[in-house]
Each structure stands twice: as C-alpha cells, then as structure tokens.
Length: 92
Image (cartoon, rainbow, N blue to C red; front, side, top):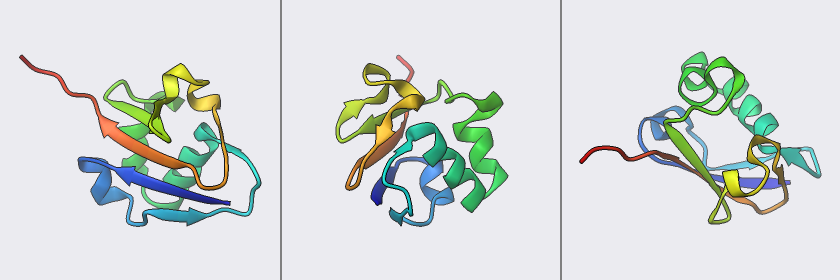
C-alpha cells in the first residue's frame, strides 16, 4: 500500500520522505502516525502525538477531507491516500 504525505511547517523538516510503501492493505491514521514516529525521531511524537493523541496544533486532511469529519485517528487509510499535515493558523 502506498501513502503520500505532505507535511507543512516544522513537521516538513522531520518527515524526510513524501511517499511510503507499507506491507498492509489497510492501516489506521493513528497507526500510520505511530509508524512515522518510530521511523523518524521522538521529536516528531512531541509535535504530532503528544500524550498519545493528535496535537491541537495540527489538522490532517486525507484526500482533501478533514480527518475530524471522517473517523479522526481511527480513519482507515487505503492505497493511494494523500495525507496533508498542516499546522493550525491562529492570530488576529
């Protein structure tokens, strides 16, 4: 299964690859993030999954759809999915 990742901001420097080939037919977004954390560095976990849940400083789009409107971290990924990891924008 191939998954494409488009990180924006600080995460972009941590995730070196943009496409991953996984030996699974289906994997949850949460398990994919755990895979990324193991593949790279603990610093990624601090940014993306502090305390085991998605940081409120990021939102995730799967094929252009907000993961919160799907099943959040339980969303099942499929071959060819494109994941955008984007920091939330704040300010005024």
